[in-house]
Length: 261
Image (cartoon, rainbow, N blue to C red; front, side, top):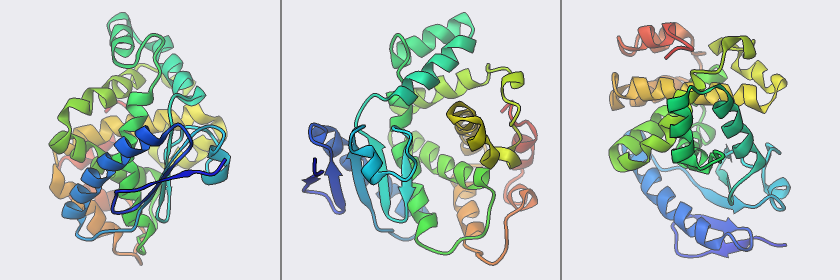
């Protein structure tokens, strides 16, 4: 079934049939988040936003797992609602959480936990990818790009939607209790290899990088967010860890604590 165009926004918005109201809410949020990123990073990229259900997902998304937020050039794709991925990640976190944190997961995401609330916060994250997709940027490890986008996400939420931070933090905090023995691929430099170990392995990186970004936003601040972008714009010079450490004194200790951030 064709996607439904949603009018009234400064960028193209489309939705699966039945997801129109959710698309309007997400598009309104995207207006606010993109404006904030533009203020921080200095220019306005192009955006198309699609809110797709499981039937339409294969036709619009490059990553086939339903629910994985993603951005390609100018196109950001978000799930229309609950997905098996959101339930699987919630169950994995719940299986390892101590009692108090188990209660927190249930009160934040439902019983059993369905992590729609966590993944919805990734709309501001995905919009940061636009700033890397539409101009030349430096070759960088995947974790650097994802950390940069997470900084933009945490910064936007902290300054503009602070009431949503608990939706990020409950899952990120719970991920710290997953035993390292269950994550044999765990070094920052190996994040790209985690795809081969399955979606929970990659999801663990995303959750721990959320915690790392939260720490760095509240120590290094918005100046670090912009400083990373300025370094990314030096497109002919590949980024290494020492480049990030040189940007702010809080970075070295935070990276050194990985994954116990």
